Length: 244
Image (cartoon, rainbow, N blue to C red; front, side):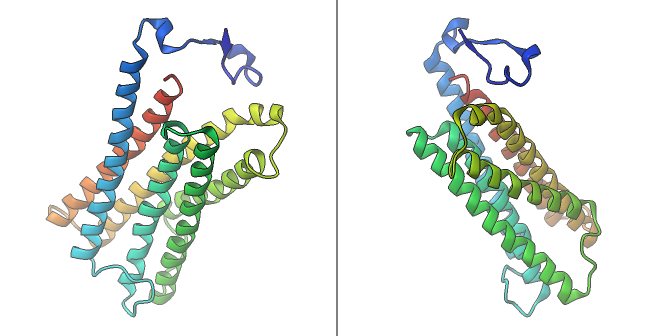
C-alpha cells in the first residue's frame, strides 16, 4: 500500500492512498472530469483579465507606467497584480500537476511561471508606490495593502525555499519529501491570500470612487466573481490531479 506523504510529519493522520480504480471509479472518466475543471480554471482567469482590461481602458483612462497622468500609472498595479501575479501563480500551480509532460518539464514550468509572477508583481507594486508619491498619498494604510504586501513577501520566501530545495542546489531526497507537504499547503494558502488581496483591492477602489448602481460597478463585481472562481477552480484542479 502507498501512504500519504504527510505521515512522516503527522503520524496521527496516516491513511492509505488508494487510486481511483480501487473505489470503483473509471480512471479515464475521472481524468476527463478533472481536465474540465482545469479548463474552467484557465477560462475564469482569462475572463477576469479581460474584464479588468475593459474596466481600466474603457472607464479608467488606460494603462501606462511612465504617464504624466497619475491614474494611468496606478492602473498598472491592478493589471500586473492580476494578470501577472495572481493568474500566473495559479497557472504555475496547475502546471506542476496538469501539464501532460515529464516531471522535469512540469517542475521547470512551475518554477518559471512563479518567477515571472514574482517579477511582474514587483513592477505592479512599484506602480502603486509611484502613484502614491505623485499624489502625496500615504503608503500601506489599508487592509488591502497589508494583505497584499504580506502575501507578496511570503510568496518570495516560498519561491526561494522551493528553488533551493527542489531546483538548485537541491536538498537530499528525505528533506525534499518531508518538506513537500509544507510547500504544497503554503502554495495553496498563498493562492487564497492573493485572491483575498485582489478582492479587497477591488472593494477599496469601488468605495474610493463612490460607485453605486452603475455599469462600472457591476463590471467590477463580475471581475471579482471571475477572480474568485479562478482561485476555486485552480485549487480543485490541483487537488483532483493528485488522484488521477
